[in-house]
Amino acid sequence: MLEHLRIRNLALIEDMELDFAPGMNVLTGETGAGKSFILKALGFLLGDKLSADMVRPGAKRAQVEALFILDDEELVIHRELLAETGRSRLTVNDSLRSQNSVRGLRERLLVHTSQHGQQQLLQPAFQARLMDSALEDTSLLTRRDDLLARLREVAARRDFLLDKQRTLADKRDVLEMQQQEIDRVAPEEGEEERLQEQSDAIRQAEQAREQYDQALAMLYGDEDAGLMDMLGRFEGLMHRMARQNDDLQADAESVSALRHQLAHLSNMLRRPPVADDLPDRDSVEKRLYELAQLKRRLRRNMDEILALRQDIEENLSFLDACALDIAALNKEEAGLAEELRHVLAELRPLRRATAETFARRLEAELRELGFSEQVQVLPELTPAEVWTGIEDDRVRILWAPNPGQAPQPLDKIASGGELSRFLLALVSVQPTAESATYIFDEVDAGVGGLTLNKLADKLDELARQRQMLLITHWPQLAARARRHFQISKQIHDGNTFTTCLPLEGSARHAELARMAGGGQQGEAVASSLEAASHP
Image (cartoon, rainbow, N blue to C red; front, side, top):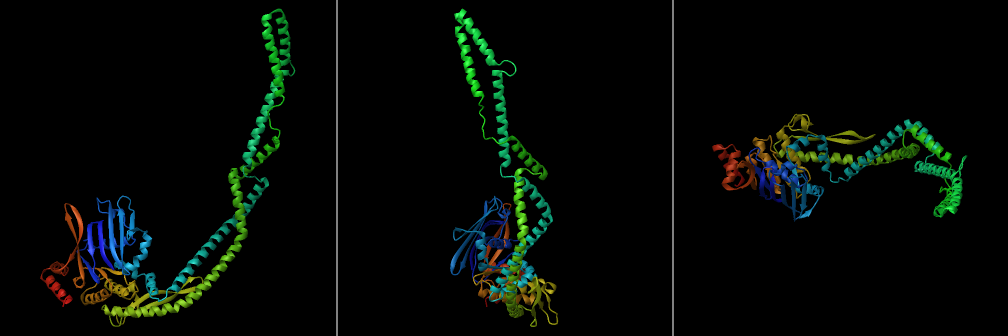
């Protein structure tokens, strides 16, 4: 049961608090006053999304908070919407929770019917779910849905394999040719870089040997006299000159020292610092050429070629193995399909029996809502293939509201008022959580006259069993409420506000009179309704 609701800074609502009573609670007011914002707030609280522009202009956040009684315990749900980001935060009993967690509580807290529900009612898929919800044991439905989901998954995997198999089969010749090209050269990971480093090392070694040979040739000469011969003669000349001139003695000794130093250098130049284990230059260059030719033919760099080799191996292995995988999936599909046949064979007679019982209960509710004593609700169950070679019943509701009419689908003959009453009848027979609060949003649309009184009686009867929140424009319904709220729109200092006022006594009488058309006639209707509600 919903005990208390507070809404702050949501749309035109600045700060609104509502304390609800057991039984029927009614919201009334002019069209456009903001009654729908209260329902939006409840939906937002239980997981619906709202955009940031729903935050009242000038406010940083909108907040909705409600106190529910669930299983004799208090449940406080609080959610706020941030104007700046559009994000929201949700707490349940002061603990942060995810939106999905509170959506799971929704069916236990609220049952919402509206004109949107009428449109849903016209959809065969929705009608089928309604009929199925009446099954005492829904485990067969769960097994059916699970098997269908698994069959679709198996079929999707098989289709993927078949598509890939067809695509690769068309390319097999190209793949094998590319594989042969690559295998003929047999490149290895990092080989090209390693060979390039060896080539550079060989080139550097050859340059070093050439430089050392040039230095030796300069020292000892090639065809002409070298530096050592010339320096030897120069040394002898200097020593002879020094014997005649002591001042040249030091210079003669320097020349001798230079010749000895160059002789020592020549020994070093005969042993250039080049590694002895360098590979053969021709073999390295030949291998680099083979790799370059492979890159040119395949129009890829070496990393891409290595990746291509891996892809080709995987794709060819796939082609060799996918037939077995497809056969395994076909076997799995056959097993699931057989299991599905057994489930449907058990489910279909149960559904047919339940649909008949559900239809009879609906007929009884519709008679109480002003339909003919001969009103008929006929569940139409037609076989439809749900998997290859497997049929399940497709459910659709047919009805004949008047004697002599042939049963037809709801969308063919039902008026808005008839749909409103049909929806109320469904709510009355559809199983729901005992703690859930019914919300009826203009379920009286298109209803009037004596039928309206029958609708009011049914709502009154339902309200004795369950709490109800009813939005209506009819005084005949509002007069039945245990608690009455008036929603109105007001303007203060150029700003618009939606307000909520609980009504009692003369204020409630005035609202009922307004709803009845005002004036003396409205006053008379209001007085009559109040007298009937409180004999």
